[in-house]
Length: 365
Image (cartoon, rainbow, N blue to C red; front, side, top):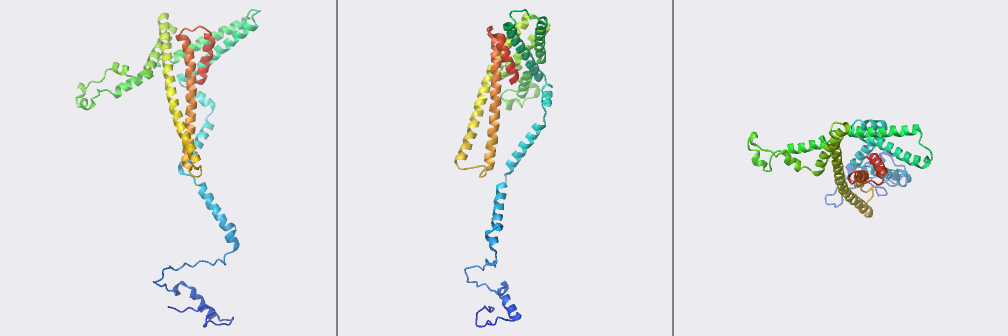
C-alpha cells in the first residue's frame, strides 16, 4: 500500500514555508487512484462530496434550495392527465363553436325542414289567436257601450282568415308524415325475412325460402309506431277533406279518429318520458353519491383529478338531460290538455284553454 503523509505527522515538515514540491507531493494523496480498497471491508468507499463548509449559507437556507423545491412542487401540481386535457380542449372548442353560431343560422336551419316550418307557423297561428282572445275580452268590457268600429271589425276578420290559412298550411306541411313509421316497419320486415329456425331455412334454395307475411310484421310492430302510422293516415284524410278532395263527413270522422290516436300517443309518450327520467335520476344519484363519498374520504380534485373531472362532466350531462326531459314532459302535458277537449267534447272555456295550451306547446317545442 502506498504511504500517505498527513499533517502533524512526524515526517511532515513543521515549517510554514514548505516548498512547492512538497505541496505537490501532498496533493495527489487525495486522488482516488492512490487508494486501495480493502476486500474484507464491509463498508463501500464513499464518493467524494464537497465540503459543507465550502457551501454558503444562502445556498443551504436561501432561495437556491427552497426555490428549486417550490419549482418541483409547482411542476408536479401543474401536471394534468391527458384525459382532462382532452376534455378541456373539447369543452373549449364547443364553447367557441357556440359563440360563432348566430341566431339567424339557427332560424334558417329550422325553417329548412317541413317540421320546423310547421312549428314556426304554429307559434304565429296561436299568437294571433291569443291576440284575438285578449282583444275580445278588452273590447267586450271597455267598448260595451258603443259599437265596434269598421277598422276593428276588418282587423278581426283578417286575423281569423290568417289563422285559418295557417291551420290549413300546417296540415299540408305534414302530409305523408306516415311514411316515416311505414319505412321503419318495412325495414324491420326486411331485416327478419325468415322464420325462427334460420339454421334450417338458410340451407334451402332461395325460391323455397318462405318469409313472414307483411301483416305479421305490422301486427308485431311497436304500438307507438303503429299509432303514428294510423295518426298520419287519418290526418291526411282530414286534410284532403278540407281541401275539397274528400267528402266533409268522412273528413270529420277521420279527424276525430286522428284526435284519438293523438291522445293515445301522447299518453304513451308520457309513460316513456317518466321511465326515461327515472333512469336519468338513478344515474344522477349514483354519480352524486360517488362524489360525496370521495369528498368525505378526503379525495380532492388535486389528489384524483381524472376521476373528479369525469364525475363532474357526467353529472352535468345528466342534469342537462333531466332538464330537457322535463321540458318535453311539459310539452306533452300541454298537448294532452289540448286534445282532451276534442276527444271528450268539452265545451267550457274551450277556446281560451286551447289557445294557451297550443301556444305553450308550440313555444316548448
